[in-house]
Figure 1 (cartoon, rainbow, N blue to C red):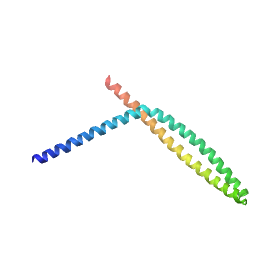
Figure 2: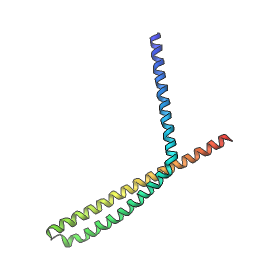
Figure 3: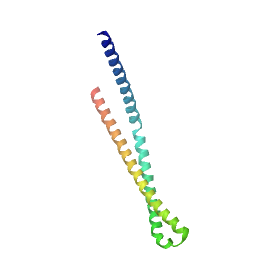
Figure 4: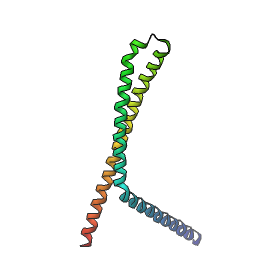
Length: 129
């Protein structure tokens, strides 16, 4: 019976120790997010703006190359270059649009973290009163 008791105590102690480590890591992550959420939001907004600009320019280049394609298709090398430019420009435009969408989600997530942090601080101030 004592062997099972010792085993149970060891398992319980290790589970408790693991729980404390998880709590400590979660607390550090919370502090990190609380401290840097504004910076993350600003960076994500900037990345989204740049990606939007890249998307517009690449889309314009792709559309221009696609519209010139009928005129350059008969010229041996130029036709392939224009076709590749059209496809690459449109592909880059779509990729930049995806980056812009991802940056928007990161920005909204950072804003949510900032809002949650502000709410938590308000609750903590109310408890102290």
